[in-house]
Every structure is written in C-alpha cells, then in structure tokens.
Length: 332
Image (cartoon, rainbow, N blue to C red; front, side):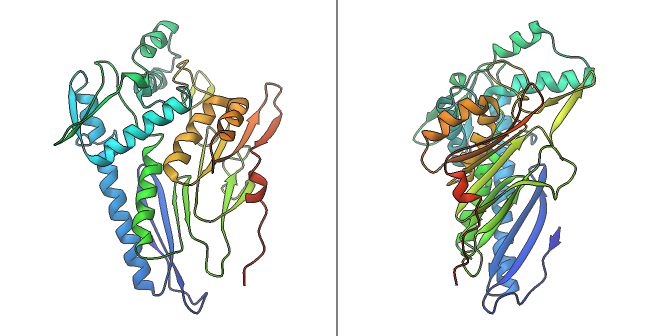
C-alpha cells in the first residue's frame, strides 16, 4: 500500500493518493481535501466499502453471493441487496446489447481456461455444449418480502467480472462524495472522475495505445472529464495463448469464441457500472454495432481502436468524443 505525501499545491486543498490491490488489480484513489488527515480518512472509508463489496461479488471467494448462486445452481440462492442490484443491472445490459454482454458466460470462460491448461483449442462439440448453458434469460430473480433470491439451471454459472468492478467504483465514489468534492478512482482501467480538480480543470485520462501494451506511458488519446466514468476494455493487456496464437480474454457469449477485432474499446458514461458493462459489450459488437448502440444512449460516448483484416488500425469515435479530447480553457 502506498500513500501520497501532503502538498501545498493549492492554498485550500491538498492531494492525497493511496494505492491498494483489490479485485485482482491495482486500485488508486486520489482526493483533494483540506488536510492530509481528511484525505486519508476519505480514501480509507472508500476502500472499506470496496473491500466489503468485493467479498460479495467476487467469483473467486467461496463465501461470496456469486459463488453461492453458482454452487446452488438448480435452486434459489439468497443474495444481498448489492448483489441483486448488480445482477438486475447486468440483465438490463444484456437485453440492451442483444446478448453481447452476458453474465452467464461462465461455462465458456471455464472452457477456454481449461483449454489454456491443456494447450489445445476446444473442439466444436465442446463449444456447442458450453453454449447450451449460456443465456442471460436463464437467470431468474425473485424479490420476496424478506429476502431476494437468484436461480440458474444446473450447468450454468454466472460471472460478474464485466460489471462488478464498475459498480464497486461507483459505490466508492458515493462514499467519497460525503467527504470531498474532487477525487479520482482508478480500478485497473475503470475510472471515475468526481468533480473537477482544484481550479476547475478537468481530470486527464490517458487511453493506452494498444499497439504498445508494454509501455504504460504510451497514450493513443487523452480524455478530459468531470463527473464522468471511463472504462477501457481490450486484449492488448489481457490475453492468453494456445498453440502459439494470442486470444482475447473477452469471449463472445453468442458464438463462444474470443473476440479479436477490437483491441481497445473505451466507454465514457455517467456511472462506472454502465461504462464497465458497455466496454465489454462493444468489444463484442465491433465498430458498426457500437455506433448504433451508443447513438441510442444519452450521456454515453465510445472510442474504439480497431485492427482490420489487412492489419491497418482505425479509430472509431462517437460524435461527442471530440468535446472530451480537446482540453477546455482553464477556469480562473
């Protein structure tokens, strides 16, 4: 864990930065507060919230709600209000994207992980068998007077990896709002910019160049945002290899195969839950599908870098991106 040092950058607010490892990634919180101690308190409260939600939503923790739902496949599993909210939001995103986003992708993810271990591509028969267990309509939610339950068929499993991190970031921001009015949360590519920086300047978010994945300082675009979430998904940093070929970690729940046409997909939205889920979905939908989807969603913008079959790189941006990639004048 690393902590920032007090600074006299402005006469009224000082920056405090703290970094921890959560959700399998590096999470950094920067806040501007009247004192170093108040900044530390704000970040600590936010991290406490994130850790509590990770225990509920992680598929890697045996005691989590997600693990309980998967373990009780074929029956109704009780879930907490946060888990219920995330699952219901995920089902909404599945309908919105025509199944390009789907939390029942678990059987396919497990199949490809096993293929990596065996160093052999899955057979068509294995893919078809896994696909029979996938489909967001298989998830049934019941909200009773005393408790809510979620049920899935035997053989199906849910994976909230494409939306839970965004939700956890949103909840951390909710905690920060009670302490400060200027903060930045970055959870491994899921970012929320709370307010503006002191002086009214927007937060600056760099979009990693997918052609240079090993150079963390190589940006292909720069975004200037205030009170917005930014989520980037792609195969330039997370991938696996089988038989000498790289494959994206993102699997198309409709075909069962990894997607590779969109190495970098960035979504800007009003909340990180939406941005996180859409960044995964548009990686599946591609440039044309993304444009149609984003144009139908108020407050959402997209920035895709696509590699063509000929090996060329193309930039596909929604109409509102230009306003976010041009640095506004300083507000004095």
